[in-house]
Image 1 (cartoon, helix red, strand yellow):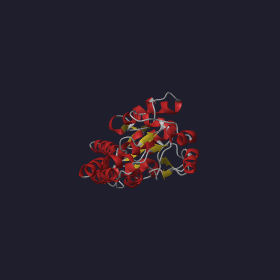
Image 2 (cartoon, one colour; image 1 turned 180 degrees about the vertical axis):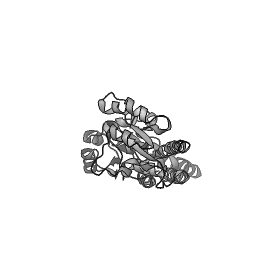
Image 3 (spheres, rainbow, N blue to C red; image 1 turned 90 degrees about the vertical axis):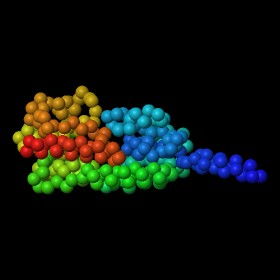
Image 4 (cartoon, rainbow, N blue to C red; image 1 turned 30 degrees about the vertical axis):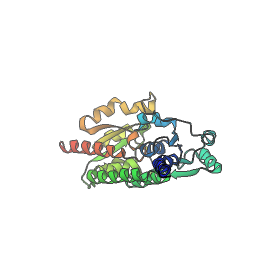
Length: 274
C-alpha cells in the first residue's frame, strides 16, 4: 500500500500539468503574451503574424509553435479550452469560440505603459501561469521606474513619422513611450487638430528636435518610400534622426520598454548639442 501511495504522489505533478488549458491566440499581441507565459504543450496555435519579424518581437520563438489563420473554422477545429483575442480583431472567430464553449479572453489595445502589467496578469491568470505572470509584471514595473523621465516645457520634441506621413498623436502607446523617455510629442505641441498626417514640408519648415521613423515593413510602396526621402535625410541628420521598428510598440509587452531605453539614449544625444 505504501508503495502505491508513493507512486501516486510521484505522478501528481505530471497529472496537474496535464490539466493546464490548451490555448489559441487570434491576435499578434496576444500571440506574444502567450509565448511569454505559456507552459510546454499549452499553445495550440498563434497567428501567422507572430512569425513576421517586422510586427513581432518574439518572431523567432513563434517558429517553435503551430500557426493558424484566425478564422472561425480553425478555432472550432482546434478544440481549445481558452481563446485569446484583442478588441476589434477576429470578431467572427471570437464569436464562434464562445458558441463552441471555449473561454474567451479579449484584451483592449494597450494605450499606456501602465496598462501592460495588468494585461500580462490577465493572460497569466487565464492560462494558469500566475507565478510567471507576477514575475514578468514585477520586472516590468521596476524597469519602467528606472527608465522614466517626465518631460518639461523646454525638453526636446519628437515626431513619430510613419508611412504616408502619419504621425502619432496623444492617447496612444507610442505617445506614452515618448513621455516616459522625456520627450514631448511634436504632433501634440503643434496642436494641428483634425489631422493625423504631416507633410514633409511642414516637418522641414517647423522641425522637431528628433524625427523618429516608425518602420512597419520593408516594402517598396510610395507610402513607405517617403520615409527615405533625401530631403528628410538632409533635414534630420545625425542625432536628429532615429529609426525605430514598429514592433517595439505595436503591442504592450515587456519588450516595449526597449523603445523607452532607445529614445532616452537618443534624447541624451540631443542634449550634447543643444
